[in-house]
Amino acid sequence: MPVFLWASQTVLLAGINDNIDTIKSLMHRLLGLRIKPYYLHQCDPIVGSSHFRVPVSKGIEIIQGLHGHTTGYAVPTYMIDAPGGGGKVPMMPNYIAGRDGDELLLKNYQGAICRYYDPL
Image (cartoon, rainbow, N blue to C red; front, side):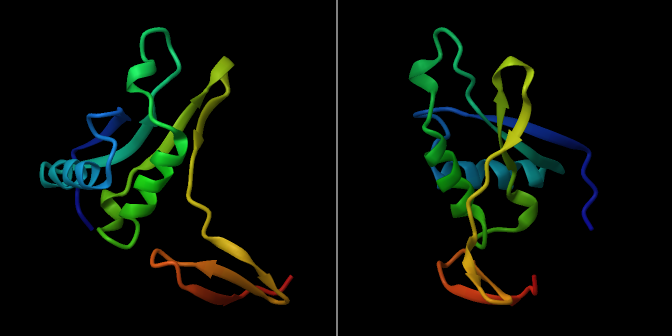
């Protein structure tokens, strides 16, 4: 198990780090410095930041593009700081495709459906 000296928080910014390759490269460089990529934050809707804001769907797409294509250590948790003191809320891709009786249908990082025995 790696020993991390620090944890990082990164803000997702349009035109700067809003694509999978850039985020993946950044996360790998952080790991090389023994810094754990901890959070990827959605840019808060504050005055003057609209040109930096990325749709939440794009952030989820980036996280989904990291899963299965790099080490889990390099995948931060995508977070929105909910307004009004709502706290940090994780934004995750939905990998549950449904249920078939006692089996949960899971969609993996390649889009393949897998069955997982999960009796109700």
